[in-house]
Image (cartoon, rainbow, N blue to C red):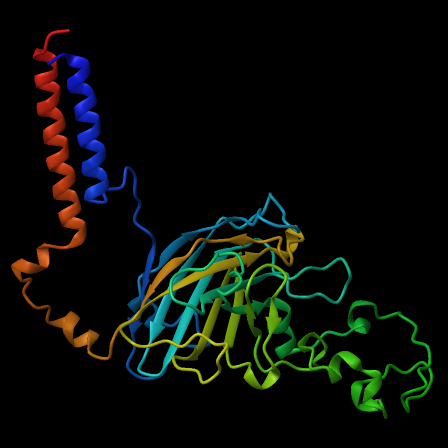
Length: 343
């Protein structure tokens, strides 16, 4: 047997082994966020609560959304830190990132808000991480800094432009030069956005988080007001945002993701930097990240871990590593034989 014949056989055998044992030529370990268990109420409005230290913070890398317009290739936020807490009925997710400016107003036309969003698949597996796809809907929770600020004190045009002049509007009962509020309109039909349930026209928001669904680019849709069941709280301090999303684990809404203790889900993150004029598709996004929830029995199991049975070592990952090691040994032996063969 000549060297070239032997080399050809080695290549065929290696390819066969890689295919048969499903050994990837390259692989990476995905990020995983593991929830911390809390007995009692979750700190849904306190990002500094000691309970957050129960959960391990995971740094999630972000990159500019550059798949479809409008995109901005030079986004500013490169990563977020995420922690998750749960009890037997609720889940809370803390998202943190560095931001030099607090952009929480959109009253002026030149203003853009800071914001962050979570995305969860509505189907088995992982649909496209940018807004899902046809037949692969996603549920999104979008926290908006301006909505957070308006809960404390709503900003109107006159707060941004105190010297503005207002013409008399015939469909209100206010006097000339007096700013009209929604209650002054005798016919609500002249407020079509409010009548249509558009949350951007709402006078008040019960939560700074908008609950949405999507099934691909251009399909983002806000859920009806009655189905807005995600709460949120955000605080900016010393150049850093801390935002908490919270909701019941289970939801009766068909467009909502529902969580079961002990299960693993996928979540993706997005962030907007208002100072960089980021909005809509101009944002930083992550790939899918694994979200592992604990079962009710998890704390007790963690306190007293059971001994590992020998069978538990025969995992798919360990078998793959073993086969890969055997393949390497065979290649080394083949190389030795190859060096001994005649030209």
